[in-house]
Length: 227
Image (cartoon, rainbow, N blue to C red):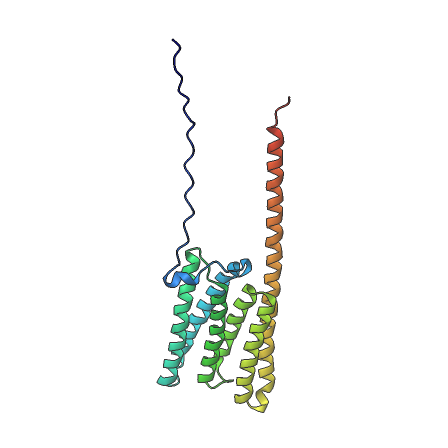
């Protein structure tokens, strides 16, 4: 009597579980998102450190020669608000999650607004706080695209130009022009450096990828066995 053979069906792989839907982020982390440009991601550390320099020197100058308690309160309020925002951006960088482009653009607008407010409360053109425009503009020029750098620089030059012309004497007009020209020159130099660095980084990545492809092709050829 022949033995009965039972055909067993092969085990079928379990169906793959559907991918989990991403959960919406809560709290401050929701501002990091995923909409960010590569160049701006590389430039955000420059913006953050330039802003820390602005905040530190602003506090030093505020306590160095305070004019009156009301002016000091306005200066401290503006600088502390800027410090809180920059602290958040710095924490996101340390966590490896650069902030959204829109958040960075808004923070840079806040830089210009805070510097302008400090200049106004200190009398306009005589205020030494105008040097903070340089810190704000150099960070913007290194991190932002050329067209945005031009827009932010034009805004800073225009606002400070109006404030200076309204508070400077006729004899001080050449100094006003010199300061405005210096702000624009800092933006041009910073943006030229940033564009050169971007090209260098792009070329280095291209060469690196070509070398990896060549190594993979050589490895595949050596693994082929002759018939």
